[in-house]
Amino acid sequence: MSTVSTRRKITTKTIRARKGKTKITSLTAYDYPTAKLVDGAGVDVILVGDSLGMVILGYPDTTHVTMDDMVHHTKAVSRAKPNALLVSDMPFLSFGVTRSETILNAGRLICEGGAEAVKLEGGVRVRDDIRALVECQIPVMGHVGLTPQSVHQFGGFRVQGKKEAEAEQVLRDAVAVQEGGGFSLVLEGIPSELGERITREIDIPTIGIGAGPDCDGQVLVTQDMLNLFRDFTPKFVKIYSDLGENALEAMERFCQEVRDGIFPEEEHSF
Ligand code: KIV
Image 1 (cartoon, rainbow, N blue to C red):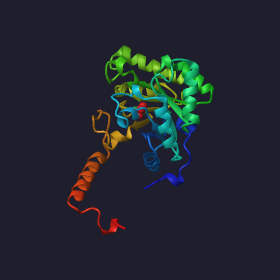
Image 2: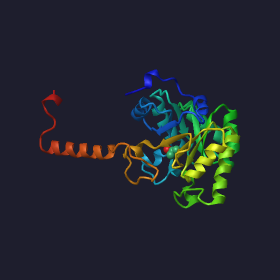
Image 3: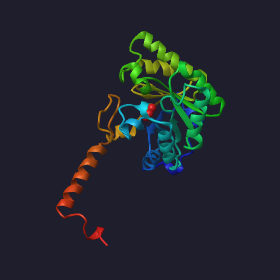
């Protein structure tokens, strides 16, 4: 049952005020029909994640995603006019190089794409970028821990913060996002205890993905939770419905019915 018609528009303020109160829900969308479904389900935050590089565009990781890709997909999602807060990802090297590029690229996601906030990966390293964006009135969601854009630096998609020194670094990164003025923070691929500790120690809401049950909210990639992306399934994913398998069965049945002369029937013909 859709709850969308009675819902009030979710803003960065709504999300900020959820800390320690009601859990925040977030799913990704990269196109108009998925955005309508996600919003209709009553999700709080629609994320146009750069995960689109892997689950939609077929790249091996997210480092190949461009600003043009992100603007194109953010535009499609914003046409759904969601009640959910629309957050769009800043792709690899679209921030953290020069301050003016960071601002202009984030500005494209807002002005051209229709996003209401941007997300960027990193902590201490990007604190001043976050501050500059917030000063330009662009709300920022941070993202620390297993940051997928660091895949080559990490030597693979590895859980971060297992060792004490690493855990302290992830905590410092989380604090840096808050100091920069971020309104919320994605925690990805860290031990549950660290997710709990960061959530307790910072004032902005944490949204976990593979960061344990104690975060202020949870986010999943829609293609993962519906098993529409079947190359691999990370441990932190729960498959809520196997649409991938259903789609395959339906497509096989279509092929069979065409070959057998069963489709189209009278009702599908003019
Ligand atoms: O790109 C993405 O979808 C993300 C989520 C996994 C948080 O960053």
